[in-house]
Length: 290
Length: 290
Image 1 (cartoon, rainbow over the protein chains, first blue to last red):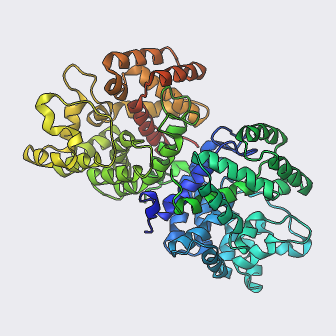
Image 2: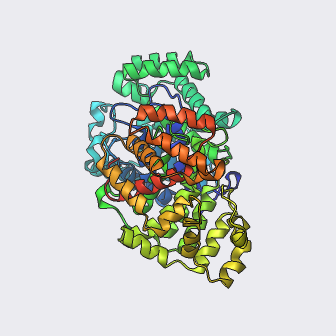
Image 3: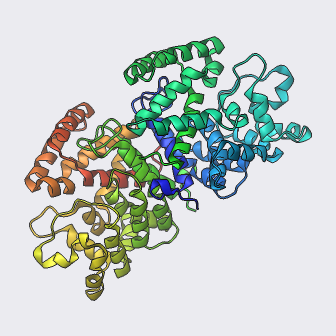
């Protein structure tokens, strides 16, 4: 078992689980569930239970399981609570990062190598994971209808026939024509560029972890429109949400006000939370003190 | 691995870890860290990290490890954060309960059988656990000075010479002459009487888990003076704290007011929180929905 000496004996899996818990606890994270905010059917407790249930899958990733199988296991475990999808996107980022860390190469190149090693089986398992929980996704373009993730296991034939690896699937989602694209897929194909940058920001920041997480979240949201907001409310709304986040400029009181407004408008920047969780994991592995 | 069918596939260890997380999240729990309250050097994040770090020890308990070894491992893992003692007492209650659950006998008789099976080695491991973290304890009576838990490993010779099992040690602490006694030790020697009763109350209650946990906490505190308050502030203060908790009568708004007052006075009813966590575990195993 990999232990991170920088952090008092926590293992890589401990740090991944703790990252999930610290992410949902960091407050204020405008529009999202956090330590001080529940949404109507999605509550703080659901995220706690999701982080507990996901653990076996994260362990599988650390112990040499394939990305797809570990991810599917983590999602199945996460779904053992009544709130529905709490951390699907977080887990999609954490699994390859855990594998990179377990191989002692938690770097952009290290995780890129994990991504590039994914297979068609990983893609099949990834699709199967969508059967455990409802995930908000955009309709695919008509020509990619047979790759709609909502097909779950039924997409297996197409994936095998076209020899599509999980890395290929992510590349297709990362940068579709004239759309914002999937922010998590973009991490997958970019060596987790924003994740590592946000981890540096968490480590360079000062003060309580929850405050650092909130600041990083708002900065990430300001930097790039959130996929989940774009999926639920359209691209114009997602760009507007980012513009409003940019006005916060690291002021947590302003972020708290924005939080009230976003919840009222139903804006829920879930993808930005995913990247925040991934960044917390990297930062914990590198010695972020808790 | 034992899975609790009543709760969507969570294992016994998952439920124990989730109980730790739900305990600290339930709010308002007057005087304690909770979802909406930090103390000066003891923060919500420390409890999250404690619950993550404790997991390996809880796992050991579920997989047939001895009570003492599993407990010491859990405490060592819990201590991998900067807040100090977050969940020592919770773990002391959870470990025998987990062993009872793993043996499919999570009942007063089942846990009593686990307690009665403890050995001198368990007692030695228990003392060793005090070396991982500072725990607030009362001075022992002069004639029991060589059994002061603060001796840690140095008490081993005395324990072996006198053939004291961990169950014997708990019996000594549960009901000392003319003092309130250790509330957790009392659970150990009474078949976890208050724990099971509080679990029934959690299951019979309605509404959100965090609210149920808060109500059970206040009721437990009203029912019996808290050991941790008695240790830090004296027995008269502990009795007064319980009297004030009794006035809350299940009203969470009144509990929130009391919380402000207790924090101001430095009253921190930690033992009552331990029993709340243990009760949450039993309730989760029996199907408390999250």
